[in-house]
Image 1 (cartoon, rainbow, N blue to C red):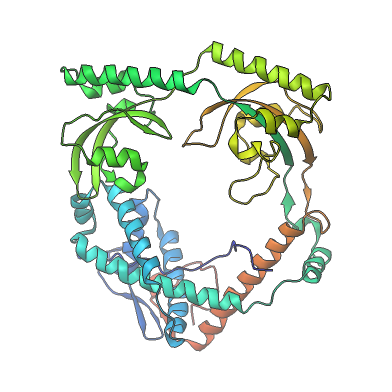
Image 2 (image 1 turned 90 degrees about the horizontal axis):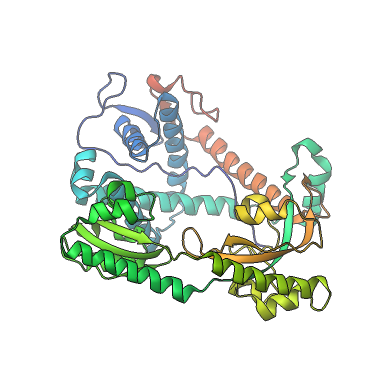
Length: 453
């Protein structure tokens, strides 16, 4: 069996985002703070990663710097071995990661000029440094995969032994799981969408005739993140938006207002404020289709009729779902809900829509719910859908056991084995590698011993 995803402490190279100006920390100008074999770690490298953390909105103190340094120390051990083993860089992966990092930084800092001012160097130089750092990161990840690939495959006997030898209080807890079927009906989307489009066309005409876009956005937009700012989104990479939205915005001239644009979030009109390469700043007004009580009553009446067929044993819930449900992802499987990422048909409460869980919490196995309003998984916030649910099975919260929770225990064993392999590699390399750490970091409470010699 192939190993599952590992939840392990992977020590990746901290990106060397070294500003061109001298960094200081506790009154100390640029200096080397560690030597790992033939590789030097400079104070500016630690400070640059701290600066990146602050750019992400994180708090950075001495403890955080100690953690940054320890990650760098461990990364150097993996990187040195990767070079000795002649591992190669995945160039395509590095290019994709570089683009993602640049988009993230430019969006957070507000554009190319602000980014260059923040880091004190031109973007092309940052690209070079980040590309080099990400190439090293790629080698480190490949080396870590090699270390973990040497772990023997876990057998059912290994899982059973782990379960038997581990005290119950140390075994993983499995939360309450629900196996659910659903029948979903959508309101009259066509009529609601037409009404939204007509409303946005009217707002666009008012803007073209001289009214301020920002004023109308504050009054009518349904985007909570931008409506108070007059619909303004801020300078951001086009990649963070739905393609239809960014394509429309990037095609506009400054000040121009788009036609109605549809995305999974709803319908928009967009006004371009500024464009810079693949980034733009725009205002938008978002309006989502609204449904009336008549839509709701109509759907509830139909769901009531379907529910009666099921309760009276005229149809099974699965057959009714195949015949009547408009929720396309589950209809063909008899309404059985499944996690879109893992395929599992069991959900804990944190995976369920709040409206769904509020109904389920009062149900017993075999119950069919009354109709209620919820949302589907489309877009960022989901579309309105009306449902009935069938609670097929409940597995109460419990300590993992071999018979019922084999996969959970298998993941746990794989995680522990992977962590042990990483720890063993670092411990062995610490003993055979010349490591010196500057006194300014000798007081750090490192996660691992062996760094200070």
